[in-house]
Image (cartoon, rainbow, N blue to C red):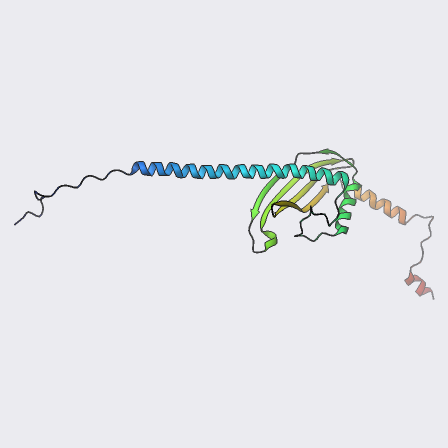
Length: 196
């Protein structure tokens, strides 16, 4: 009988397994380099996109506040929103109430990508804001951009001035014009009908 517990004279012990620790270390370093490179590349692209939106916002705000807003049919506006000429005219009139802009601040933008079930809400968007100082009040301008077919379009433009007394002054002037005592007020049709 053979001894089952002991080794047989013709058997050799197996060679010890080589450590794969070196492969794990090299693989981890390569993976870390890929992840780091991807992050740096994404960061550089985001920085370029934000810088481009900053420059575009500065140019657009200066043009809009100096020359007036372009007509509603201008290709600078995104067709994702319904824009009417009346809305453009009202915004332009509001801006003109505060006088010429005397100082522009530096714009600040953020760029974000969004995915949504509604196609109008899915894309790359830029949200930008900058401060301005007009003759009658300081204000803040916000511009919302959307990327459409590699072109950036304006999806929103808003100007908010901090001194609302300018609007109250205009309202008081309108009231005074309508209610001047030396001008007789014509009776309305309803008043004329009740006299008969």
